[in-house]
Image (tube, rainbow, N blue to C red; front, side, top):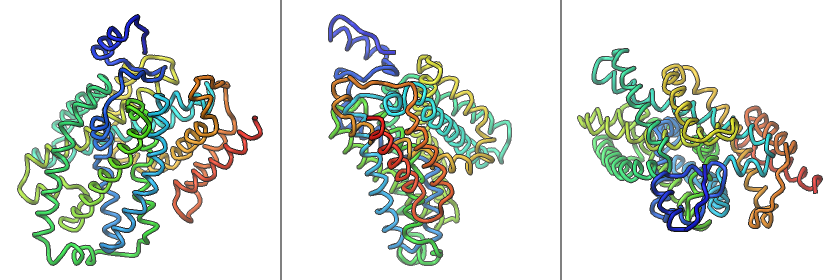
Length: 422
């Protein structure tokens, strides 16, 4: 929780020592980070092995130039969405949950907090299993005992980094981002060189019937749920400009790398993870390092977000909620990995309506946000109905891009509601 101190120097010292949660207040100027730090945190956030699954699907369904077009189109749309959220978070200094209180109401914010926390705990568990299962298989022939030892160790380490907050996330990102980017790219280039023909020829062998729009939809859906939590991190940026640029550039670079890693893995070994490529290239220990760090940089951010969401719902401090989230995600990791990915993808469609409502709320009520005079109601039913209707449309309507459909419906309902309310 935030605390007040009599002098700025005293406040600086305590903030640096305790890494204040700021779960119930805006991040003050003295706790803001520079552009490079924000860029590394946001770039590490996108380094997630599940995004490589999307790269595999895109490579299986598109030729090389179709893959590039889908990647660019998806990147532009995802960048616009997350960039706006990044701007709002940086300008206000407010987390996703504090922004939700203004847009959805005191109690209405529980719906966005619950959706975000539930989804991020789920992806955290999936990520832990994505590390433990392949490593146990390669090292010990798939031993269940070793698998669970790895799960417990990985879950504990990732939970600890989320527990200690933004400072810990920053340290992990500074270590992991360069290693994953450089080692993964080297492995990708080595794999392409060992393949038959150029990279264009290799893509052409497996290209199927996926359209560019369909590929862009996959690219957007791969990280739109995580991207909705952008304000939780950009609230530490110096200003809106830095928060926006760091988000857009980092998300585009990070997601593009993950899609390429997945695509090359599919073409080279028929898999969906650069880990498998590095194993084939006899880079065993580097493969384990890249896999672990790749998942860690996203998992601690996911758990940090889940902790903030649960803190809002239960009116508790963030850190105990992070521990509870980590324990749940770790213990359920194997079950989540084998049974829950489909449900998590459905939930992914429910979060873009939340994000677009937060953005619209800010720009429609900018003066109230800037002067901290925003009147928080108990429940803004138009916002709640907008999210529900947007989620239904995103999951049911097959035309177009699911997340865009959901955002449009939610935005229309919310804007109409705000006009009526005023």
